[in-house]
Image 1 (cartoon, rainbow, N blue to C red):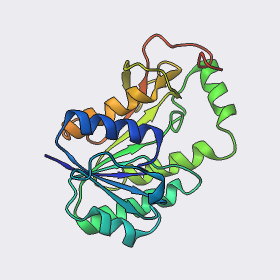
Image 2: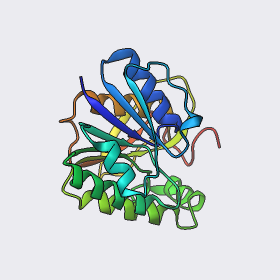
Image 3: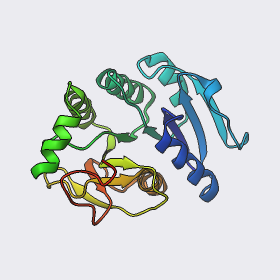
Image 4: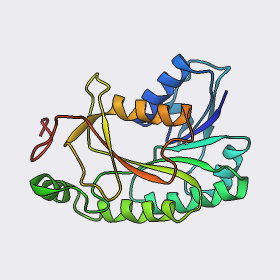
Length: 213
């Protein structure tokens, strides 16, 4: 049994991962989010909801007490600040294992016309802030895994392949269900992909842009 703190627990991928963890494991889940009333829990013995702000170190430190793994499903313009605060809180509480959701394109690793399209769609500083957050995680000294999903779909499918930092990104899209399954695989085997930044896409989806655009 593993104690998992999920930051941004009301996110779509996080909720899929939570459901899979409840159905397939005996892990204890602490669900951290800004507004606790937005979340309904299904297992009161294994789920605890904590209201807090991921830019507030005291909130995070309190939630991290006794945890084994932190899975951060965060995002918005505060992502770099969130990364710094999460790292500081983990160091203060002695929690080492971090799974961090980022985005594709933070290393200019997306090739060709798809890479150009991705930059255009994520213009306005989005990639820069996520890249800055990833640098914070990579320099943290924690046992981190950064996940860089392709463009996300709601398809009811689990099908994915991975690439590593330094490799050209493959594919244009991936289902949220696939990313959740990958997250769960890392929680179930925390020794996997430590110190890696992993691109995740659905095989066979190469092209100039995702099929749903």
